[in-house]
Length: 388
Ligand SMILES: Cc1ncc(COP(=O)(O)O)c(C=O)c1O
Image (cartoon, rainbow, N blue to C red):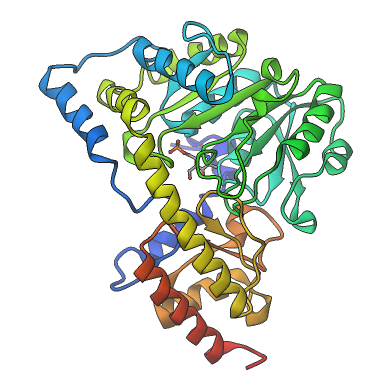
């Protein structure tokens, strides 16, 4: 059989994170600072709700859009917390994580040749998904601005084919986030050029230094924002695969058309558990957040004090230190650190071109592991540094 795989998929690069972690699998005693998921298990009352729903015999499909009860709870939750007003009937769709939501929105809006702005370093899926839809990802390197997108840089990259911005804050892999005033300036540019904001706020609940502002709450932004969020990170529910997307009814209807043919619906057990998360999970979220914050302080101070400088992250559970001091580039650094000290970090290049001077460190692992990992990194630098 010749040429069975499409050209687009052939050209697609596998995720740099996966490639590296295939190496880690099978190695013993490795401390992994690589994973992008909570080390906590899902809080008990949420797991129990999933178990109970099975005991009660809830094993069917749900409506394509997701359980009405879950959409209603989300609508009320977003209204109470942020004053956002989304109709559970027409403006909310339950998806298989933010991953599916991102895929759906891009497929729903992109015509071949449309440009989508993707700030870098950024989450690994954005560029490949745009590409797969026939769109053109337009990357903006944010390193020189402390990893923040500025309105000036955004403006410079817009032309008449530019349709949307994919915006993620707090950000993976840097932890950087934005205050309301900064967001308003970005919003003004999007408004002026009549662009859509695809706002991935999956780490919104894990913001430590100030209140998280959803993009859709900015003046005039709601109609032009697709708000993506989910249960994976804040409720430690990665394996349940539940996310949601809120937006204008025309966009949600278009996304639902694709979702109904490809996914049908999110598993009912997971949706039931998500209802419980909204009902009783907030206390657990706050407790996990407190622990991430404690770890962030420890790692931020620890890394900076051994010369791996990183800007203070406002949220998520990542640090993106500069590794110049080691005299190595990211892939060498990560491979050598793994081999010599059995600590796994993700090479910065996994998050875009031009980030070979960085690695991503996740502090979604327990405090004792972090202490030990920091000692090992210190020893590694002492043994390998050009300035030792
Ligand atoms: C920025 C960002 N968006 C989306 C996702 C995917 O999340 P989900 O589990 O909801 O599909 C991740 C997971 O790491 C992420 O970091």
